[in-house]
Length: 113
Image 1: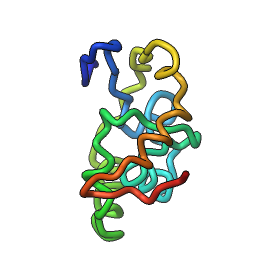
Image 2 (image 1 turned 135 degrees about the vertical axis):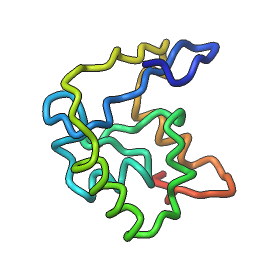
Image 3 (image 1 turned 90 degrees about the vertical axis):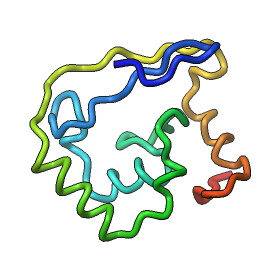
């Protein structure tokens, strides 16, 4: 499902159901928290800023735990791989999103520069 159309291309959402094959079902609570707060996927790669992780950076541990419990136990798994985002170079290099995290903004994500 497309979540953001941009001049560079369409960014597609990931499967955030607890599917163990196509979604976040293999995520630990810490991996889930890192995706929400820091924009880091379970495999360690950067999420595109279309996922508004800066808006979730200040969630409490209790809020993250509640969201994790909801997604893992209150949502039905959907075993469908979403379409892959295909942006042009250099935006297709997810590690380049780390530079985005170094940009100053009101709701900050701890910089990893």
